[in-house]
Length: 250
Image (cartoon, rainbow, N blue to C red; front, side):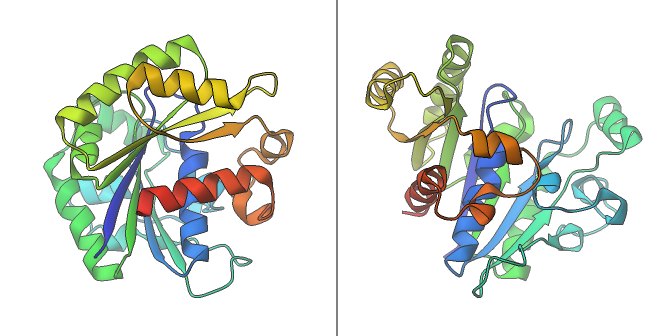
């Protein structure tokens, strides 16, 4: 039985796409067939983490939404060469072309096509899990993604602006009856006590914190140069992502 997982944040800059890429890689390392869809149509970027050159991309999520192709025809295998094992990762990127982003902003698209496309992608690629890298905040496609999900991870920083926006997302997700919802406290400064952070956040939202990810100089240095868990499989931060991946699949 395949599983749909959404990775979301109320604000940009939380590390949502990095979290998505690392979870995808770790699940593939366990032998799973993983699909990733970049539904952040207005500010796409996860393709960079997987080393997918947009100049080599023909079809994208935009192409599918405008009826030019099927969603599987917009999927590109991005399995890291060093991953090993039988697992695979396919990415459906959103276009970074200025004219495509402008068209989405001006004309919009049929959001209802997303759900059909997700199901087709799962069926045709035989996916074990489909991970949706959502657009920050709450809009129509984000609500659809959350509503379709078996599990939702909400990424936030230990920051008061993130706290306020996250409360909105948690409330909406509860109304949509997402079966599994967890919080990921990311980019936590070393001077913070992780247990205190976890306790404070869980109390604020009455929601489980799956992991508290500490600030990492190595992660910051890699930035968008690759998938951290692939380059640093034995790093303590990778262990945090590994625990999150397991929780989202349980």
